Amino acid sequence: MDCVIKQTNGTTAVAVATPAGLVTGEQLAKIAELVKQGAGLAKFTTGQRIVILTGADQVQAVRDGLAEVGLSIGPGGKTIRNVKGCAGSLCRYSAQDGLQDALALDKIFAGRSMPAALKIAVSGCPRNCMESQSNDIGFVGTPSGYKVYVGGRGGRKQVLGQLIREGVKPEDLPALVEEIIAKYLSATKGKERISHVVEKQGVEIFK
Ligand code: SF4
Image 1 (cartoon, helix red, strand yellow):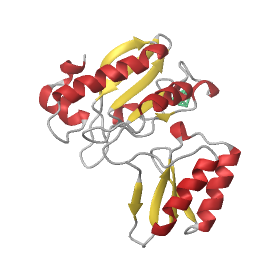
Image 2 (tube, rainbow, N blue to C red):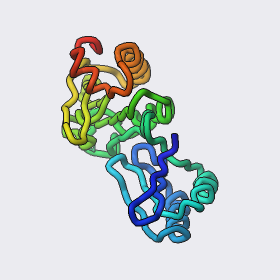
Image 3 (cartoon, rainbow, N blue to C red):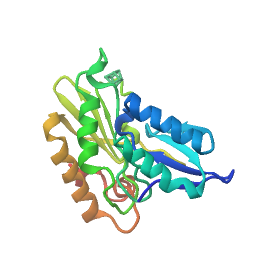
């Protein structure tokens, strides 16, 4: 489900999928062009995406323009959202490459339909710039691998994710995310997020 949302000022917000907040100069120039053709404004989101404010009749033109530079409209609603990632190995503090590992996860999981929104964040070290414990699945890099948290969320009732694993190697992250999703899908009733499942059934089922 594309993230296209009507705004109170009559414009339509179109969220561009920019996994881990990474864009090229060419992509940024195209986004700027589409912004100028729309309402003249863009907004950066907490999910590391750029929202273009435009007219409802311009959504297809935005979609086509984004496709010209290898971009697309990001997933919204009941899906796995674009994966957030920190600066990774570009950062002098990095213990793991939170940028490349986030991009790898995004390729596999972003856009997959779920019973509710599912957010994933990857931080390359314990400074935790991606606030990983505020996401449904969060990773925090350490020299021995990633610490893995489940059940975090923001919103009206904020919850911190709980630790389920330590020392997970980057190459094992996709399989572990699949495992967590499988456990979530078999445990959830209706539209619950992972945090609701943890609240009702305990974090043990994810260990
Ligand atoms: S989480 Fe750590 S590695 Fe990533 S940007 Fe922040 S300080 Fe750098």
